[in-house]
Amino acid sequence: MQNKRILLSSRPSGRLDDTNFELRTEALPALADGKARVRVVYVSLDPAMRGWVSSATNSYLPPVPLGDTMRSLGIGIVTQSCCEGLAAGDWVTGFTGWTEYLDVDEGQLTIVPSTVPMEAYMGVFGLAGATAYHGLVKVGKPKAGETLCVTGAAGSVGSLVGQIGKALGMRVIGIAGTQEKCDWLVKDLGFDAALNYKTDDLDAGLQAFAPDGIDVHFENVGGRPFAAALRNMKAFGRIVMCGFISVYNGDKTEEVPDMTAVVRRRLTVKGFVMTDHFETYPEIFKALGDLLQRGQLKYRLDVVDDLENAPAALNKLFDGSNKGKLVVKVSGPEAARAM
Ligand SMILES: NC(=O)c1ccc[n+]([C@@H]2O[C@H](COP(=O)([O-])OP(=O)(O)OC[C@H]3O[C@@H](n4cnc5c(N)ncnc54)[C@H](OP(=O)(O)O)[C@@H]3O)[C@@H](O)[C@H]2O)c1
Image (cartoon, rainbow, N blue to C red):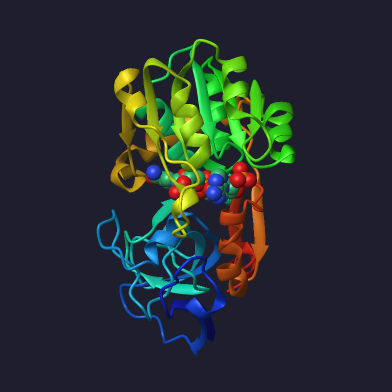
């Protein structure tokens, strides 16, 4: 049996391209004792992957070594097991990497119930959902009636942040990069307002929506939207620092945020990374499951077919052409079940 995987072959400067990766097809060895074989169904494409392929060693995960399978989260189905804790048919999620198959030890991936659609584990019950909930609820400490602003609002994290904020009784404004995304936020997800950072006057829009200022700001992108939010914070407001996608490719920020506001407005600014909080996932997913059941959460997936397309697809996160949680479909679940 053959396996396809994608290796990191060089480190990019600027945007990733095909030359940074190598597609390798090779025969799968016999399954070793104590291991289970997983057929990957979806791999997740996340902005953080741009950092993982850089040589920077001062981050929360080490760089992916050159010549290794590209690191990514994913979900798959156990097709064969020589290990006590895993059985054929189990759904497992975690760091699968860009590969069709991988052989794992017990505990390397997490078994998840097959009672919800598999796609949910890539979005609402995956990193995006955990990040949105932990960041807003545990870091932002929101209260009903407060005003929430979120950037990258139509993305996988941002769209959930705004909806969780609405479920908690907040007034929510989102900032996104197209009119279609802004319409989706207001008309489909129930945001109170949305601003297009490419065409709207952000200060005017924020002042009209939040004349007394923003209580909680959730930052996903950095640059001009962040600078505008910072200028419009209420005294003693909280800023949740989740990500800075605008600079991950090494682009210069088009506007340097004026951090003196942190002192003038006596703001609390806190960063977090979800890989530090794996133990809280069950509690978070219970809370998100309740919101889903009550119809208070919607999510959308942007599915790219075929593992070979993963490197090119990753750039959709940086040009904004993804509509919702970006994933690659590596195989149909039926393919894994048939093994
Ligand atoms: N701290 C953590 O543990 C953690 C975990 C997961 C994700 N994150 C961070 O959360 C953020 C969102 O991640 P995601 O997975 O939900 O991605 P996403 O929002 O689904 O996709 C990325 C979006 O970012 C926007 N964007 C790209 N370049 C931009 C720029 N120069 N200026 C403004 N917006 C830009 C684009 O939307 P527009 O069309 O609106 O421009 C794009 O669709 C990222 O910064 C990521 O690193 C952090």
